[in-house]
View (cartoon, rainbow, N blue to C red):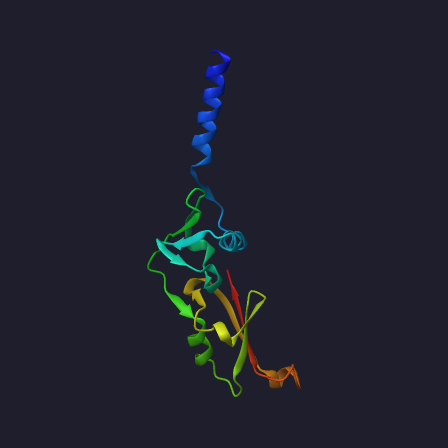
Length: 153
């Protein structure tokens, strides 16, 4: 092979690998990072906003990054998975005070986004209802309400 053939081979190899899609490891932080960079996130073919979904990592079949389309495709093992809306979860909790905050995996969410947030049913590991009265909190910057702690896989 002469030098021109080697250069041509290297350029073709580079072009074919740069435009290809590749499988990546599913991590929520990585998915949020790609979303902030303007990538389209698709869950089983439907466009989603990952800020509103909490997925079960054990139900992820594969995650594919397609750079030239600026998209991330998430495929689940069980596509008939049921989701629990955060708003419905909050209304089902027996509480004397209104629930003002939900903390999911250490991240607090106010009541503004309750109707948009969805949690995969199988991913819920633990739910704990913290009553403000039992915590001894007198005032917490104006409005005091109960807190719902949710831990997922």
